[in-house]
Image (tube, rainbow, N blue to C red; front, top):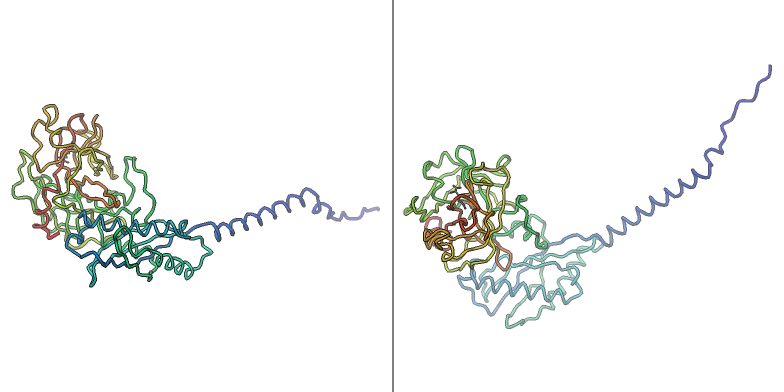
Length: 419
Ligand code: ARG
């Protein structure tokens, strides 16, 4: 009987030149990608860093005008401080790392005014914290102590902030969009649907847990809205307020304690269509939920300027309210133009304000009442200029939205709420 020797598996299969070739190529590729990623993260990938500091402004006398970001004095002084910082960093060796500076508060100080500043930088990850801090501090030393007649003593002490610290600093202020809180680039707005945090002061006022009107957060406990929302339901116990862009899944909900309607509200003429509502306890402010700025009584709202109206109201006359917050860009229209015979023919009273688009199509509608009409100032803070009040149908040409003119009721708001 003959037998052939058992076949020994040949090792040549493992040394197949193609297998070896692809194996080596794959190995080299994996190594190259790993090294590239490592280099990228260490050297090129930039991370944001926030710092706070206080600058002393010795030759400016502190006055009540510097108490509120709504005054011209506050805007001018903060704007000048921000521009000194920006100019200095843009001319320094940190020009590529410096992003923005923002004054969050002006405080009185023994020798003038103290400005609290937040600054944002982007550094690649291989920088160490101590060296970044000292590089920033040495640029702060280069700030001229007199710049266009403004004397500044920058503190060289800077404190590094966590994201939460930054949010808390901005929440002492009003009207900040989350993009301002992160000192990021201007966002492009044009969409119809709002993103979480886009309108942090927007409130949904709900009657027996069903959306009924919009509202505007002006402090941790007070909401501004329209008087006509309470025409047939003025018992606070029937009402709740929700926060966040979704009505179905609100970020927070609060009961309502008190409803104060303007004594001279007239439902025929819509005159004095304003009310304030007190929450049953303070709503905790977050990056996405906080108050809007109120204008000064004397602030003028220029015809032609851009404003945004937001709400869950219906998207066409006779339609239903919607579940996700919507926004519309409109333009301020002078009362004169708005009272033209083809428009509202005299029905727009001095305490009212019109806003719309010339051909119609963008407007508030049923369910938006009591909600905000806001404008952005030169420092990117948002101010309330109107409260959705009335209109003939919705979005008709020559029939713009009519709003309660907030500047006309600025003192009334203070009388009711102390704000
Ligand atoms: N009164 C309406 C409401 O109860 C809002 C009217 C706004 N209309 C307009 N065309 N802008 O929700």
